[in-house]
Length: 96
Image (cartoon, rainbow, N blue to C red; front, side, top):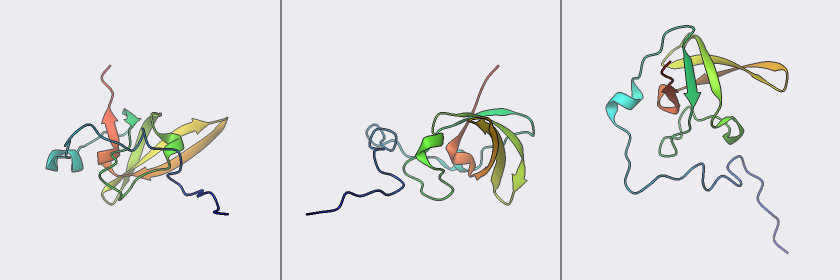
């Protein structure tokens, strides 16, 4: 009998799919964020580099710094503060 897959992308068919031929632009790769700015964590499925686990998809995070070409973000997950390093293509600015 076959064993069920339990990889990091298991059960993420809707989260990791795009409509039609949406392609990321060069500007998407070089978005800039200021320290203390709020951002939405939205995984871009066409770019694997710098992708976070799908459980964090849709979270609101606070940008706290830079490391190389990635941004350091912090957020609270079940009472614990977590820090991740994310490529800017997987972040969206929040207006307001």
